[in-house]
Structure formats: structure tokens, C-alpha cells
Image 1 (spheres, helix red, strand yellow):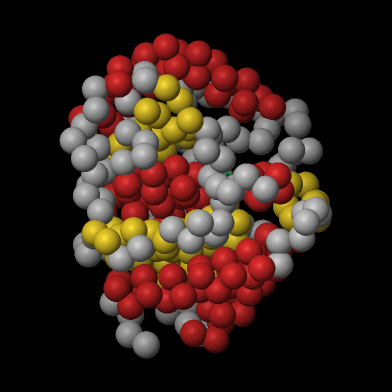
Image 2 (image 1 turned 60 degrees about the horizontal axis):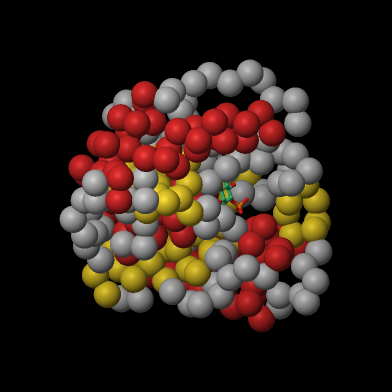
Amino acid sequence: TGTSPQDLAGIAEEVARAAGRLIREQRPTRVEVAGTKTSQVDVVTQMDLASEALIRAELARLRPGDGMLGEEDGLIPGTSGLTWVVDPIDGTVNYLYGIPAYAVSVAVVSGEPVPGSWQVEAGCVHAVADGRTWTAARGRGARLDGRRLEIGPAAPLASALVGTGFGYRSRRRREQARVLTEVLPRVRDVRRIGSAALDLCAVASGQLNAYFERGLQPWDLAAGALVAQEAGATVSGLRGEPAGEVMTVAASPATHEALVALLESVRADAEELPDAT
Ligand code: IPD
């Protein structure tokens, strides 16, 4: 196995599809919550854990020298300089309720596995319920089910369909609700799909004109951000810094500029008080 971004994208896809099969075929009729993380509403199902274990085992077999950062089990460093950044089920709450918007997100990065410090080499977002599969290799474009993606012309903000998402902590949500009251009257409409990876891919595929979210973790955004970028979107934070936990905004360049200006004007990344729950 080679290590060109395209080879790595192939491995990301293989592994994401294998996890997707597990998640689909073994979806219990009543998905059990295995635990909670940052708050009562931040759940992890037994299938998140099983999916991550399968991905870890597959990558250990296919790419023994690489590290892996997974949502559930954290970082296991490697020796090759490459780290796989994995969300075993992005959209866990949708999965729990049987809403078909959940995905396996697998990316591979060089450098520190931290948004902004890393270079994302390749990624795959596999929408488990309907099988749509986005792949991207750095400098080689983005594809949906093998078809090359190119985002359409920029939409004026007033007619833009804008995706967003919310963190799990109550203080963060209060802040996100405030920002939403400023954004909603100024755009066509807002969607909360429930999977950051699918939101970023929706921007790449033209189902959203833009997406923004505060509080994303590395595994939420690594693969999807590369897909959006390689399709021609601008993906960044609010002041030109790389996309990351403080803010992630993705859209075609002119829409991105307008949305960033709006988010800045309403101080969408204003400092928060420490969280209680
Ligand atoms: C969540 C989803 C959601 C986003 C949250 C993420 P998870 O990931 O991507 O859309 O709004 O910020 O934490 O917990 O389902 O893997």
C-alpha cells in the first residue's frame, strides 16, 4: 500500500465502509446508550464503541505505523507521522432515534493531530443509512460516489440555506441560541442536520450554501472539511484562522465572507463563562 493522498483516501473509504456495514447490519431495534460524556444529552451508544474498535483493528492491520485519534478512545500515537482521525458515528443522536443522518468519518492527517496544526491528507465521510460516500485527497479534489464535486456559484446570504449545529453543554447552547436569533432572520433558512461531517459534505454537494458551528472536535471536522475544501469551499474560523473548536465556517468564497462578517458582528465566538453542566 502506497501513501499518496489518493491511496490514503482509498484506505479511509475501505475502513469507513466496513464500519458502516457493522453499524447498519447490527443496528439494534432499540439502540442502547452505553454512557454519557460531557453532559446528560451527550450520549455514546454501544455501536459507537463497536464501530471505533473495528476501525482501530482495521487500521492497525492496514497501517501499523500510523497513529489514531478516535472520538471514544482518544489518541494512540504512531511512528509514521500520520494519524487517523475518526468519528465512529457522527450523528449519534440521529442514530439513536433512527433518523437517517449519521455517518462514519475517517481522515488521515500529517503533523500534530490538532485542527490548524495538521495537514489533512485524505478523508472519507460515509453516510451509513443511504450509502452516499464522499472522499477527498489533498490537492486531488472531492468526490461523491466517485463523481467529482465542484461547488456552485456563491449565494447571497439572504438566499442562503445555512446549516449549523449545537454542542452538548447548556452554557454553549444558550450562546448558540443567541447567535441563531441573529442569523435566522438574515438567511433563507437554517438546517440542523445533526452530523457535522454531513453538514460539511452538504456544502460540498450544494445541499447547503453554508455551514457554521462552534465547538467542533477534531473528529467532527477532519474529513468533512477536506471534502468541502477540495470541492472549492472556503473553510476557516472567523478571522482567517484555521477552522477548529472556536469556529468553523464553510461556504463558497463570497458566501463565506458574508457569513463570517455577520458572525463577527454578532460576536459568535464571544468568550463563554465556564460551563456548569
Ligand atoms: C455531533 C454532531 C452534531 C454537532 C455536534 C457533534 P457526534 O457529533 O456532529 O451535528 O452539532 O457538535 O458533537 O456526537 O454525533 O459524533
